[in-house]
Length: 263
Image (cartoon, rainbow, N blue to C red; front, top):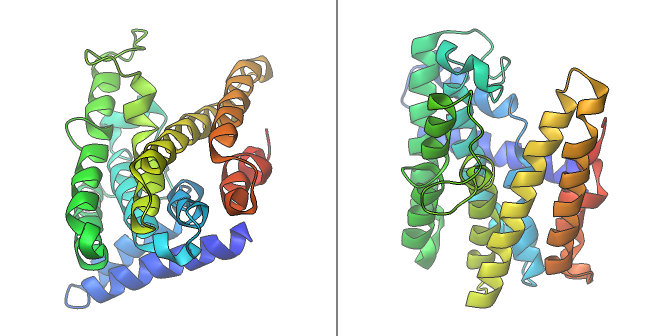
């Protein structure tokens, strides 16, 4: 089920890129496509579809948000392939088939803009709110701010931002929060459901970060604590989602599937 949805998400994102960039040079279009096909963030983006199903709507209801979330994260991640970010261990060297600093900057900027365009065109009556939430997730109060703090203070133990948020909330939880909350919004969720979906997204985003950290650990004893915390967070998210059939996709993504494979 999850692999089929991943393929559908990738196809939808590539289709959106192809339609939006039909008049630009083919080599740059190929670069943008490469950022999507080499992305490892599809599960997080599919929280949008899971949230729609959780609100008793078809999974496809949340696909516009899933596509935007994938573009947002791919756009940020391709920026992290630049030399100044190598110490942060958030980059994916395969994101571009051929590394080029200028191309990475242009591709990242283009993907962020395309995500906003996609939301504006496919968000319906919720487009304005979705755009605002996407900006919040990535901008001065979101991922970019968190990455800036991590870059400035890599040697220090930063756990809490001045506004009280944990550092992981802005670096690894915001795109997941946007995806889950956005999928619920498109499904007509109540304010309470929107808050719950956002919390599920934050917990899943944190767990995903810890899983990736554990997978990249050079010493096996470094794996235990991150994985224990990740599983604890997933249990908390599962408790919010519930155990009904409408939460099946949520569970597949965040706990019961290959999310923890190889660890």
